[in-house]
Image (cartoon, rainbow, N blue to C red; front, side, top):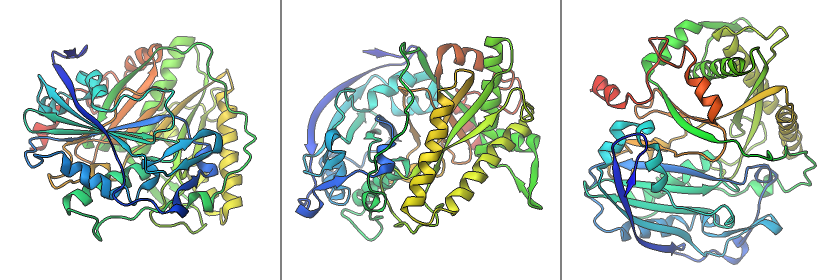
Length: 456
């Protein structure tokens, strides 16, 4: 019996079966070796967890239907069924298969998991995705189907970041869902393109990657929810601005990131007794940003980091929320401009490595606190419809590294901030007046049921 440390819920997860699902058609010989791109070379070596929740689903009586559609869609996403070869920096597309687990969940209904929200049961979510050892870096995708007595399903994915970013993962889950719903690969399935190794061939990367800390600090994951009403009030509080004479309003992502960054700066000040220089690392997709022509459904890692800086002693040391939001917007605007000037592979390589060097230099500065953010908003994860309707909720789980993931809430117009911080940083962060419900427009992280009632 697995008991949540944060709620009264307890459950048992029984593993029923474990197998490998291979592509239904053998991968042709000329596609059986896929070198990773230089963008993949820069990606972190970790597995990304995603969970999709479908309550009261009595339409799947046989898991074999999910297996069959997965086998079919893997003919298009064939690298995911292969194995990564670290020594060769390549994927052996040998059709060895995707690990596929079927599990039965007793003791709790899926609706309880959804209604109580992520903070109440975030330790239980870890059991809805496959368990892969850190030493096993060759597998690229593992899937776990969790069946509840109430008829609900939770589909857990664990995808290697080595060859897939979040848009790639979203493309895959939606393609699989459509294949299942349409009982085969139809014209509605977005065909992936694995052209990145040809567009961005491997390079000799001479970068000083930051060393791993000698002592790993204890980290903790908590979720903070900002609903539409909260975000609208944040936007009103921050206001807009002008850019080259053109008026603009900050996006929901900018205002939520600004609020969190401001609170993090405050939490560091509370620990050290004075303001410290701070930076935020965000992620920008290269899709539809660079001037170099790219395939519409290009899959792989196609992003770069960019940095926003808060100078504790300089002109950019104002801690007003509007000033923090402007720092974020200015850094994003510069990154977009640089992308627009990248017209070929060499330009992209030069730009991406420059931004990575800046990031690594920032991470190596002891006097600067760097906070990492990643946005999963508007990627289509909430659109994965297997024929049972869109998922009632999507989530991640406890993350192994310190990063703040911002994703769409269950209604699509709010933001869930899945924050993983050092334990001491989280303690001070939660005590910030803006986070500790000091402002009326902030929504508590466990207030899922109230939000659902207010929207009905």
